[in-house]
Length: 119
Image 1 (cartoon, one colour):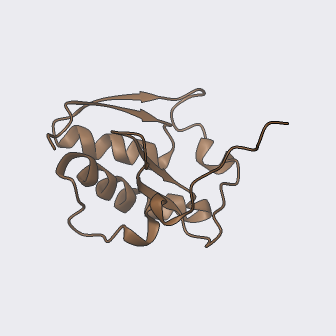
Image 2 (image 1 turned 120 degrees about the vertical axis):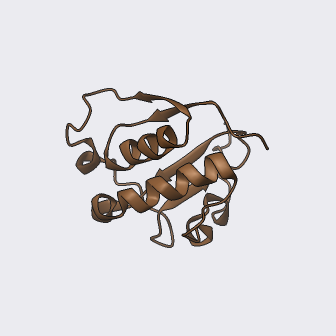
């Protein structure tokens, strides 16, 4: 897989900004999309994203080519943002992170979301 030349990062909280920083350092053109302002404390106002196992989601999104996620760090997001940003940037550009094992956080570990049946 060829490394992307352009990436859109959704969210300018600590993790989004870290991912954008490490992608830019690797020569990727980055556009950051944020509905409020950059560094406006959005990281502390998350919607309470929870998983059954309590672990965050970091990695490729199954079924959406070129889509990645890094969410669910809760209060640890601030502390882990640089490592998460670097690992996700390496996953996007190189296909795998060099220093961190992201397999425990792979979104594919969870069952697929099913839509409710229509009446």
